[in-house]
Image (cartoon, rainbow, N blue to C red; front, side, top):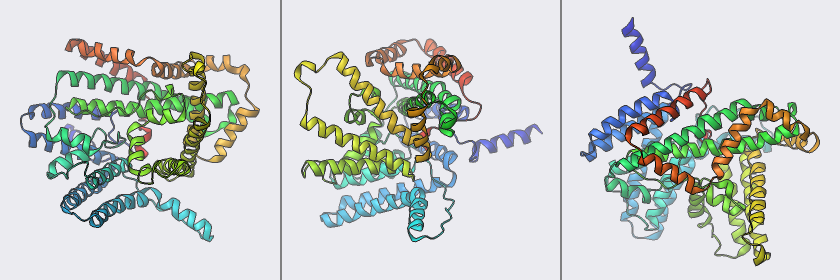
Length: 494
């Protein structure tokens, strides 16, 4: 009987379970990653063996998240590798453009089928007054992220910014590498392939820095984001009419903080896990709520996506090379498509268009009027700009989170006509831990960068035993705080 139980447990571990995907914030991943790390360390002198182990673990990790869709990922690897070699041999520009176009069509075709087919078919059916029953299409986890990495690889070869990867093992390692696989950052081949070729090595500093990032990511995700979501934000957006305008406003602010902690928490963990394997990624968030205008916000929020959209969409559309009006139009279209990238919903398109308008309005105002020299740098002006920008961002993320325009209208009506500021004290008393979690997420975000750097440096300077004890304490807090049901990372659906 014990053997049967053991075999059943082993089966559960090895086989995909849609109700229990393996994510960074699960106990199963923690146990398997520790075992994987021991094997990885033991093979540090054997480059190919080490790479094969990482690829195998990455594919298994993806299989546990998306089942048979792992074969799509493998297919993209082979396609990119072969097309990249072909592209590198061609001299004529029209042939080179044809190869890039083929790669883009394959990747965009997958996105259209898996993410947008039902939306497009439904729109077509409404125009033609025909009935359409949505198809049950399973969305492969992280497809938007690895297709963007694929496209950037081919375009960079076309632009002669990189040479084609001639080692299939190297390219497969790059595209399947598990830390950024499901929800970014959008790592580019020109940043990672050189590290792979150099056989990036571990160091105590990288390991300590990685552990610190993993701990901060877990706290952001489980202690703040999941707690705010399950105990407050979801209730507001599920039925805004049941709550006062003040509570609705706090729900919108709460979701903005939740989304930041959830997504930046994933990025922290992904960057930290990569560091523990010897690979360094660029930061993906740089305190975006400190931004004083919408343009600055997009330099700080989801940096890898913002730069990708700039380099592979905005610039090919013409960038700012064809006049001011065309530059504004290109930026607006880029943000609309960036919104659509998030999923097949009109709400994402509206969110993207909203941010496109904000960017255009900011640049228009800046081109015709600037603050007098005497007012620049003043603390009160800076604080006003930060508060105003944050308020605009909260409005945008209300569209991002709401299931429909009706929900947004309902929230707006409650805030405009049923605000009841007098319940603020009662709200704080009733939702004390929610207020604490939101305040913790916001205040920690607004602290000077030197504080975070100092805390990281202090952790890296600790003896190993104290690092282990602090890690154990953080894991204990995470286990005590986490929700009874696993809360997936928000960006896994994109």
